[in-house]
Length: 254
Image (cartoon, rainbow, N blue to C red; front, side, top):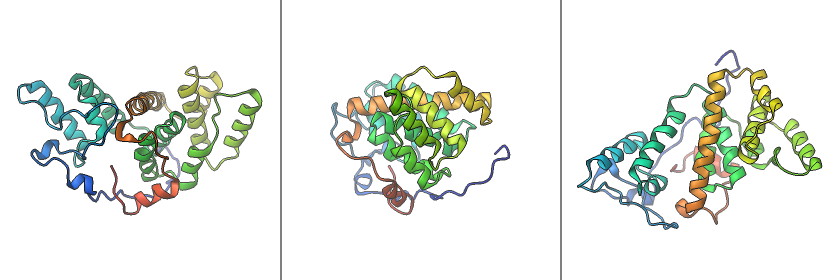
């Protein structure tokens, strides 16, 4: 990893024991089995493609292949109202998740920060465990969850927020990512000094592009999740870091 020290993950593996809802998922076609859908603002799309639409069948199959061995998730069944949109989404997010070279812990840290800033409970609950699995430490994840925004507020508030970031448990690379994610998510325009700090921290051009598209992509994800209330998470609290650690040490993941 470009000469940086190895960091041991507090979450070496996620135990994917089936939950009750998973066991009760549709079994008529194992390729397209799903977590039992919850109620959201729209009904979920059918868990299997219409027999009369071979193009949709191919799209369902591609999404199922990326999710394997997990079933289709509520987000998939929200997007599959428009199979072409779901297909493009699957390709774009799949590339970010599986074909990038940026450190996966740092990418998931950025995604988790986006979830906090946008109030996307579903996104935090899904990606905070992946941050731990990628090597982010519990105290670092806690900082991501609790630090105030460094991008919006009065001058005095921003000064305090940036001081809190500077004194946090985060590494210098993680601090640079949090600042970048805050600005991309909340003000869109990124300060020159914020961007330059990524380069100072040794991120390559490719890594910066992957980080940028990851933050942008998961801003898109969070807005879909919250607008449609996918999984009925809007009224729920985000899991605490202790709860996330419990996920890592034996409970189910979805």
